[in-house]
Image 1 (cartoon, protein in one colour):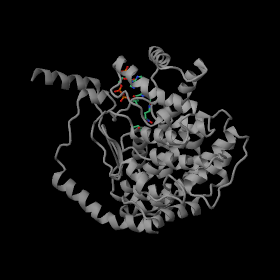
Image 2 (cartoon, protein in one colour; image 1 turned 90 degrees about the horizontal axis):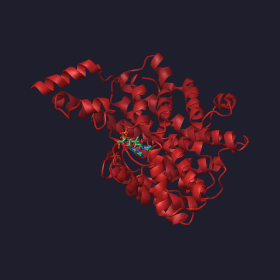
Image 3 (spheres, helix red, strand yellow; image 1 turned 90 degrees about the vertical axis):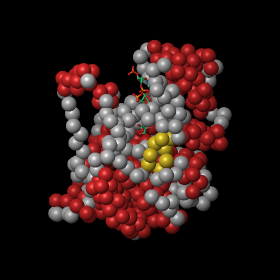
Image 4 (tube, protein in one colour; image 1 turned 180 degrees about the vertical axis):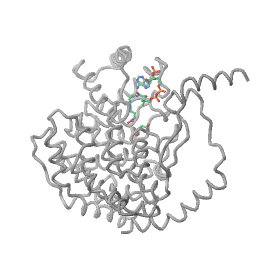
Length: 436
Ligand code: NMX
Ligand code: MLT
């Protein structure tokens, strides 16, 4: 497999580079931590490392050094499509180079060969109470598949540390291959009377998801490819990536680790914000019966804040400008359906809400994040059951977190175990600092 060979070829150099850095410069400080950060969700504490993506506060995400517009231009695309193969993106995340079409198609082929979901995983979903949240079902299905882990099996039969990454790559390909079928099964079981649509062997991973969802508009294939690219990775400190890394650091396999990551993604301050955001847009639309004017929208947003709620889709822990993932989705909507009411509303919110948040003066980042508009695009194509939206985020995010776990294993990253202090200890540290 070209993918595996290219990862393998890089590992000795990476190991050497990291070993040298730790040996020669292990004591060099990268920052300091203050009491505000200890109580404040470790914001801006630099304690993680990844070479797969980086979020600059004023620029946004770069995947392996490439901005989103660069990726949309450079990654190989299926004939006649506007958006790249997810297989090419996965190659880039894992290997670090823009793949050739042949390399992207090899990943797509691997996924096809590994995409069959064992019936027992579906049976577990069918047995769950009908009102179980789609994210719970998604996480359950991933966890159910844990018995398939090659890493865990080989580990218990004796596996050298240097070789950990190999079965982790196998597990990652096996799991990611199945995600479109699992997600669309949840959708069809939950909202379409259980009429399951089988995978089409002629379609790429992103387009096959669109097909299995039962959305026939060809534009949805490109939206799916775009969606899966944009949500895949956002450096290491976000809740889903960090949870996956943390659990994986105990040498739990990718099924345990990704399921944990998905449980974090299911929180309303993280991935669930896309469902909350569409709900909020519909509340606005239904209140006025049409796309309201800026003044009415301004008032609605103020009312949301005064009722103690956050405005979903706005604000970010790291970003301090409009999320380029928002911009890419906004541009997609402008190209394909600028007159769609809910899309127009989401675009109008962008003109109003940052000002409302600035007036309130609490949010450090008043600008839209990835979740502010993703639901409006789904809604246009008829995927309107918004409690499903975070599952699509999860399908994409597992591309990033699994690529990270392969490299964490390749570089022998240790079990994660930061130190905690008591409040009395922090008070003592503060008293000493004041006295000196
Ligand atoms: N609406 C209202 N208040 C907000 C918002 C918002 N969109 N964003 C931040 N604030 C408040 C925040 O609740 C906090 O209030 P308090 O001091 O009363 O606790 C204050 O502003 C300072 O928060 P920040 O330091 O700016 O933000 P933080 O880094 O703590 O949190 C988020 C980041 C993303 C959790 C926060 O902006 C938020 O809750 N946004 C809405 C939910 C959302 O869109 N989440 C999705 C993020 C992207 N993703 O997919 O994960
Ligand atoms: C993400 O994509 O994980 C979100 O933007 C949250 C984050 O980066 O903190």
